[in-house]
Length: 382
Image (cartoon, rainbow, N blue to C red; front, side, top):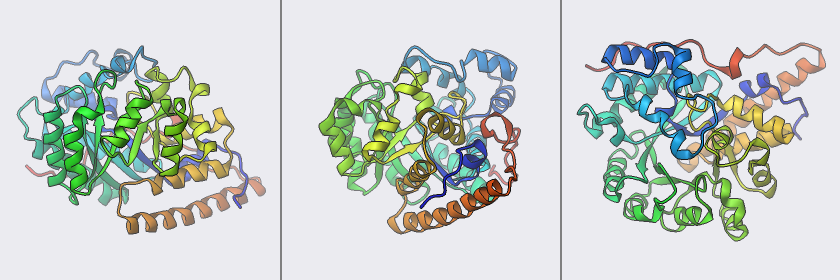
């Protein structure tokens, strides 16, 4: 039986976590963006961190998913070189490790990083090298999900699926379909997903974020999705809801992002708690650490406060994240056992501290944000 403790930021920061839905091009550090822009001669809408945050509407509500996605045009402008891809991937994994994320799946579309002539293979390898450097430094497990883009032609998704096949077992953990959902059905990209499935590669699909249950049904039945990204509108179709539950298909919840894109009216109306109570496997993720201005710790704290989660609820969600990771069964099972032991130790330590009246060590300010921007270690290939 899980010890009852108050759900505090310090406790959530200490517990082992996953981030299974995190976009590389939405998770840069502002300071890094400014430094990369200066190095590359790129004009940004502002030359200070505060100014850039305001220009990009960081952490603010947007009118639609499409409006929310406009911020990516700015981040992508400084992510067109090997060095910038290496650095941003490295820093993202470092930032995740700083809040005790044990595993992060970093998703991005290599086709969006070719503006200055990089080859797709070079893009993939630069990101993987940055993640590996962070793994060596912190011990975090970090892999890649290659994204097809809904509003690009199906042939582009097929090329990206081929890239995923080539890098299977070399750091690419799976395939995703992202981009503007409305008017861009997942079934148009069925050929890419068939190639993915034929090669026994895991896949997820953004669905039920800006469009209704039919989008989720397409992700499952046309694309063979093993997880669903966002899925906030799944509750509108009880039969499909039960199908997802019966087949233990995880939902990658990104609560703050869903409020900001207008997918839900506010945090109180988010279906997370309904899904959790119904028995779905729901995971908590950041979506975009920069554009949404969040961390996994912050997302957990927001949902815990909004829905009066118990420690048992939080633990189930965290364990569900590890169970949903795109790893081999044996690696996943070993990791689940390891983090459950760590959770027991951390909860025991906090419980003992509470009993003795000793306040736990205070987490860093600002929602468990990581230390100031750091440059990647030497050793990047020329």
